[in-house]
Image (cartoon, rainbow, N blue to C red; front, side):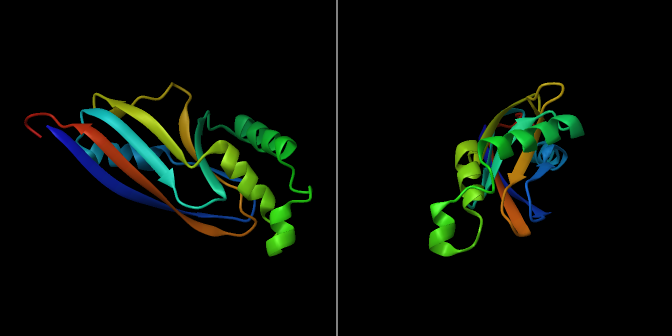
Length: 145
């Protein structure tokens, strides 16, 4: 039978480009849902954070952080900062390019991720935040579940 489960994860971030591994918490939610097959959708509300996948190890995390800084430098002049004076124009641009949502298939009750692939939150804001990641698990539960 088709089913829909929703959940929320909360994480605290710092002032900077935080890259946090969400995989264990998300995998727990998928297991708890009892879904055998389907699709997970994750969404982060807000315009200064994004979701993606990466190999979550310090070298790649640092490489990603450095690449984001090269592509969208903090020290450029951003119209947003001129208008609002909050100094986080760069964070809005970064989040717009990396996007607020992510879909991952579910098979045999587990996330379908590559061996070295994890789900990560990227928070670009220039102040600490409490982020809420919303999840929807859509799919089929076993007949006896």
